[in-house]
Image (tube, rainbow, N blue to C red; front, top):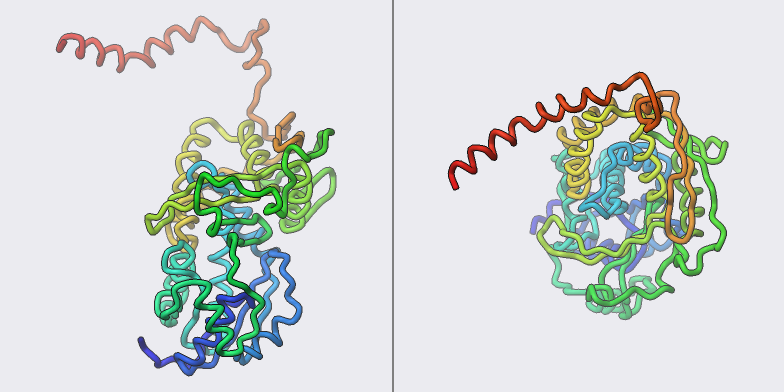
Length: 403
């Protein structure tokens, strides 16, 4: 373990893990520690954190309001890409880490720090997300990952250490599950949720009502998009952060956005996670639907193929990579025509599209109609099908000769 560290910027929350880490960094590395909190819409109480960080040994605390930047520059580009990991996870935790790490690096540069530190464990994805970002943007900085270095094995060890060292924490040994919250979602994992057969308790959920307790009357909403970005809700223009906040409230009220999945972590471990993403779910559904009338077929299919790759890049922490940036350029070029309005019905856990319109619509009712029309000669389809099926017809003919 190298001890040649003069100043460290720690991604800090004031919870048990990062409080212990702050103290441990000073004691182990004899370094100045600058604590840094990213406000990305987690709704946690930030008052008193400066005093707490200083009591634990920090020389300074930065509290950075990144809420608008988070939604505008990270969530919205991801929604434009229709990125969903393993077909179900809307990447709420994954998409936040690159921004948190980027700002941590910027603070390290301002403070002339020579290292950064985080509280991610050696089993999870977040260690990769934090450190990949650092290696991309500031490879000269040392990275200290205490969970990969210290002797502590779990939460009880941290609580005992905090008591011994008089570190101000409120945690107890009871830990039914862990949570991560931001403007896009809340995730729950670990503890009692580690058995994938255990159903979550209803009192666990913070953002959404159960569909059974949702209103018996549906809500009808309209979202306006410009170049793939949601810009207005029910006639009211909103910034990206406030759009997502409003949709979280509406979607949560109607029980939308709960997902219970077992996902494949980058390190190879299968992990059970439960997520609440009400506003993000509504945006994904509405955006995809508007694309259906505004993007040409082959371009849409190509984008669909890239969307899965894009989702893996986000999940694996590769936001700051040439590949993701190249995909983003392709995605954003495809969104020039994604302008218009989508109408949805929110009811009992479902967000159902009931209408869509766009000045750039490619939908031609004359072509699509089953009624009499003069535009499309149905007899032409016979020749098209013969040519379309020519390769398989010849292939099967040869295969039968081999039987």
